[in-house]
Image (cartoon, rainbow, N blue to C red; front, side, top):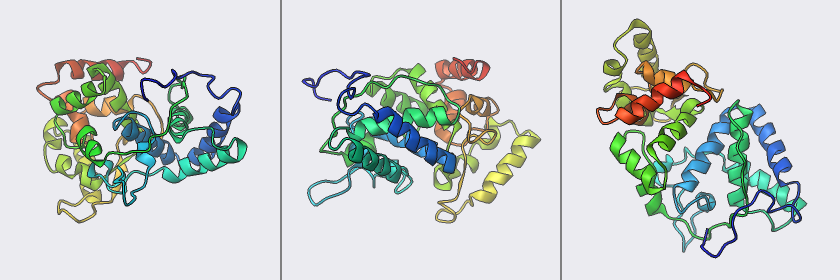
Length: 280
């Protein structure tokens, strides 16, 4: 948002599109009921949008002759960002109800909140009035979005750059309690220090064998195979993700670092806190 834009409010569309929240909610209910994984797709899309130029819908822009969009940045998983069609469908519904009124940036932000609620997560208010960006930044997508094998200090720096604290970072990482990761994102972890962090107990060993059967060691083989980031309750937004870190079974290096990194005294205590108290 530009400094001249009016502040976001809960009733921004009160007179121009009063049913906006109901329409988004109804569409999201259909999509999440059809496939719970759609909740994770929308939440991830929102996160990746907000980390580049703010929550402005820039992630939704396709490449043109003049514009290099963000969709093909490797940090966006080269086609692993799904959910675009869902936002398109919601936009179409809103266009027939109140043409030219609701921004795609607002749609994505409301949809992410509804997605979380629909898989058992918390409610939060979504003030609206965002303007859609006419620009995108492939370069910022590459620079700003944390990757699966990034070190803890680097990830903390990226969150601080967005004005988010270490506490925010550990809490937001808990979104990995839903959704799947591609083999390409967790190969280094399961053929690296997984055994060391999980203490080689028999249950962790059998889980590791399972992961290796999904994701072969050879690069290029099974790169797009997926598995749940939370192997206990993959379709439920709960605090199970933090328990996987306590067991040393975090699927991504970047996640397990929150608990196991030598630099992570603060993050480790936050992981313990969120594991012990789902409300926290």
